Amino acid sequence: MLDPNLLNAQPVPPRFFDSAEFIAYSVLMMLSLLLNAITMPFWQATKAALYYSLRSRREGFDLQLRSPDRP
Image 1 (cartoon, rainbow, N blue to C red):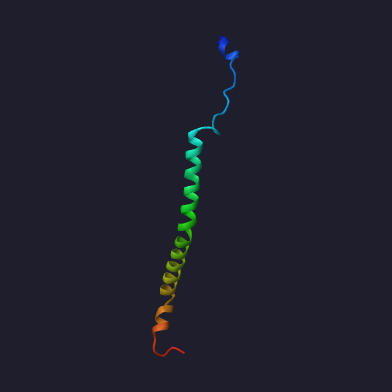
Image 2 (cartoon, rainbow, N blue to C red):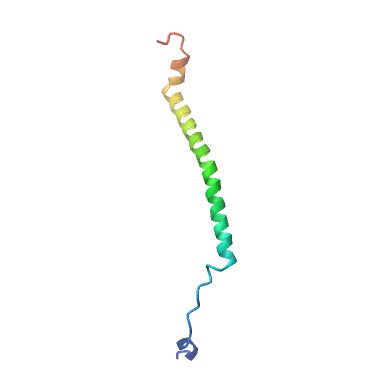
């Protein structure tokens, strides 16, 4: 049998935009964006340097540069 209180239930209004959780979430998102904007260029430069180092060693480019009879 149906509960009569369910038929008269009113929708609960969202309280997301006026709550402390929204403010905390917004602050954390801004902090995350700022930290990523600072650290991401350094991370990408590190990856590029490691890639170049590993590739030049694998192909022997560093040995070619060190050889005395280099053209």
